[in-house]
Image 1: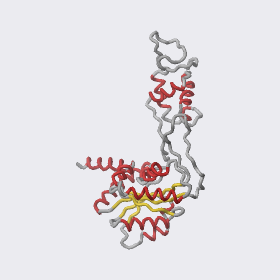
Image 2: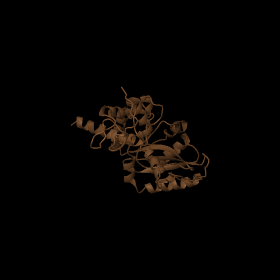
Image 3: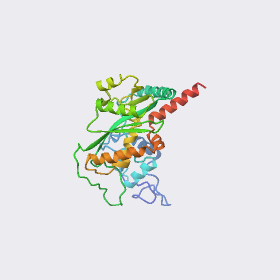
Image 4: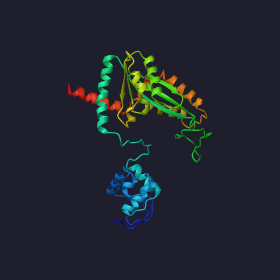
Length: 312
């Protein structure tokens, strides 16, 4: 049963007086091992799962949890210390797409292994393709500032239509990157234009892997695929699986190195900077291969190794 609430820091020499204060001046931890284990389990889920109303774990939520469960009132410092002691760190989360089907993702990993083997046998190139917008307004990212100073970024508040839209394609085997700027939004017609660019720039048979977005379907694409001796195959990623697309890393890279905390005011200025970035990638093939590997490649490598081991 919870006992009377009292301030308990759980740190040497801190906190209010306690009955179990030792002669050597050391306070035993406010939470015993079982209580710490319960707290550790709780912070791995949302606060609402523990019956708390706040949306995200913080020292305040830890204090509410400890007070409600154990009848102890911890200081803010103790709450933070417990989070660190239990192995917790602050990370910016990624979305876990619940609509993604695990069986379809697993099946695609198997298909991708076979696709890589086929491409190697045929001398084909595999390109992962995606599209992205880069707005002229500021895209806020964490930045270093002097302690006590506000982190501010100037903006002229350009309209939403001031944006640069791009297709990009990356080949993990060679580190090659292709890009194409698009006026306005993407659609089946612009997708065909980009496929034609890929076809013109690379003589080898091509395998293009992309998602099932609306710009990747339509009569224009179906007609283009009937081109004689095209030697270009389209492969669809499983639904809700952006983590399987290495080209997503290109967009993250641009947002980190080019557009972060910068107001460009006009789309042309965005385009000039992004174009320069893509031009520079031509001499950074090894870095491209390293940065663009995704969960798909890790799973495929593990599956291929397991299969090879089973056949030996």
